[in-house]
Image 1 (cartoon, helix red, strand yellow):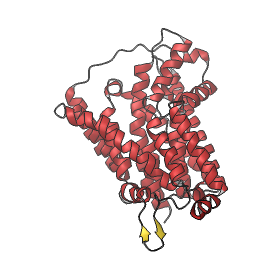
Image 2 (cartoon, rainbow, N blue to C red):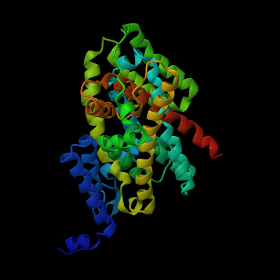
Image 3 (cartoon, rainbow, N blue to C red):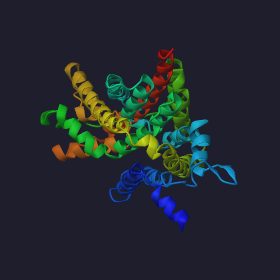
Length: 379
């Protein structure tokens, strides 16, 4: 009885706040169906690691010495020591992606680059707000709209705020259907949103589909060597999909592997959500900066499309540019829905999908660029 009383009395107000945050993440996952595979284990993990003397954390016990906690162990082995979980997840993501729409219209690749503007703007803003370069860079990568990349960059750079960054990245990915329409309407007119884009797909040969992941890996590796692990695993997954002789492995990567790693990653990242390091002003600032990154990524994609339209005969609907973020396939679905709302006969989905998969490539390359540049700037 005394042990129970001691446990209850040792709960701090910060831990109570973390219980509320964990409950909110679970509610978003279950009630709103927002990234449930990640937010639910992340929310439950936030509760687990904030129970006083929790057995999921490594601790020293009287008479037993140091006892390894399962979540701390998973974090050390699966994330901290080798970045294994985020990288393995990229194999599954690569196996899910069909690069056909972007290969049939290669200029959509430009939107995958343009929509990364918010990353660098947020790094600048975070630095001006007092974050050191490492934490500013790790915060900016939230704008890539790519959870695994955000976790990997913040981990490799050694950011103190990996938990807040992971929560922000995945939460805002889930909120893309709310954030993007707001941002798009800020920078486009109804006339621009009504622009029609006939879909005339060009056939993409099997050889092109096979050479594309290999070529992207080589180019990205030469331009940003630090991106090889990110781009390489993503493209390896896509090569499994496109080779045509590993259908069973492709399906396993898309389903069992991706689901298992996603589940483990969600609950493991909660090791960095301990109340004493999570509840602070910086966490609130990171969440706010995450919104800035998402909004300006979307705006940058739209504005880039508008610039192209100044010189192009075949106009591009600026909303397609907004799909250049990496939130695949949510962003392309949002663009399709917004296009149909403006004109029920205007189908933008395939154009948006092309920009969206380009954003997946762009996000991992920009992550590699940051990993390559930031350590050198600290010398």
